[in-house]
Length: 295
Image (cartoon, rainbow, N blue to C red):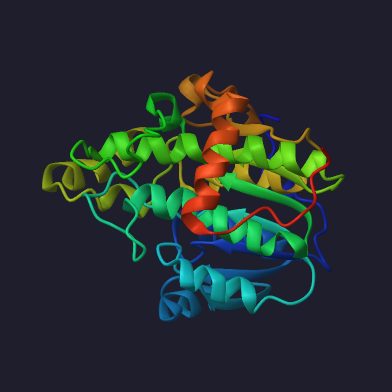
């Protein structure tokens, strides 16, 4: 897979994809590649003006719809307006290592946006999904743990701690989603991917002037560009892989390189924690798995 790139995508004419956070960074790189291969791509974005500006730069079939993952009413509205088949859902949007804040529903911002928003969106759209769901995680999951007794990290918030928890949650979500899809007899598959170290605007919202000043230099020295960072997602979105596969770069430390299957931590492979997180997520979002799971 080392030399695989976006020009190797199959013909996607007649297929529809939703990409969250599609107006910048990995999202727009993913959208550009899918549209160039013939897919009709819906840019699911928080800011419609920025979304329309991004869509104008993309060759291919696109449309823009509003989606704020930090607001469950927005997630419900987006899903409620959907009609027809959806071949591919790419849960790409996210926030990274930001100062402590809450979503409109009162959840810690990173957990609420990166995990709960996508959890609700996926389950609400799942009756329409015909092929696969790809959720973007991070190598930062390796430093994460799920604080089941304090998911909002109240009184113990740390930007990196919260980010690691949300990215670990993405992998546990993918694991349990695939288990449920299989148990329901669905042919839909769930995958996860991570971009390695990709130069995007995520690193510039830390709230720390030192970090924000250092990030562009670090990106220049060590990162790959967003087009390369999107390749694991694009591979997961289009290639024949076992359900629950996890894709990332094949270079040293999974920082850069071509897409390949990568490992995850034991914590990210724990089926009991995956089930527990799913149950908690259903309770918090009031969104449940829409298919019938065999006993």
